[in-house]
Amino acid sequence: MKKNPIIYITGILVVLTIGIGWISIQKYLQTFNQKQPTIDLNSQSLQTTPKAASTDNMVLIAAGSFAMGREPREGWSPMANPLLFNDELPSHKVYVDAFYIDKYEVTNRQFKEFVDATGYITNAKDHGASMVVVSADISETPIQGTDIGWKLVAGAT
Image 1 (cartoon, one colour):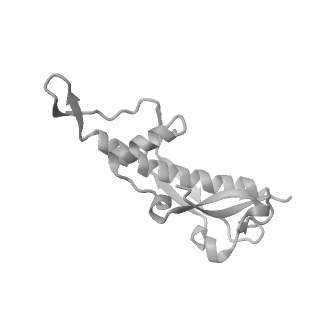
Image 2 (spheres, helix red, strand yellow):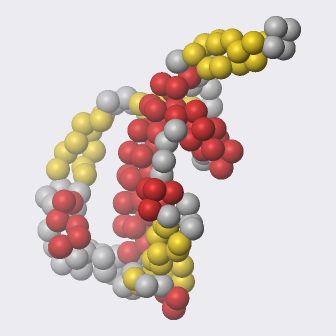
């Protein structure tokens, strides 16, 4: 039975999203535990008021273990290039502490608020370009066995 490579790509993206999301959430929550500047309209002076961190619209993911990585067999995915994916070998059990994750995707507005509050600079902003998923016929790096690929786009931040 031939495996669908999109399932594996999706799995990898989910794991990466959870990891990046966890780091972003921690940085975002740290900024709201600090004093945030507000303007007192009566005195026209700059005052600071703490803004409490909140887990509203988040769910607690229970602590637990999962199998991370993959089995060392050929053909599990058209992307199974050993030079690129050796860090996935061998499959191993990983324990993750409990953490909160948003119930909903982060909006562009929320991400902008996070960037403004923390001074975070994305890799794309730092480098002035970003790899984006495009159809395989215009990609610089097609993903074997799919109709999509990656293309470096200047100014895509």
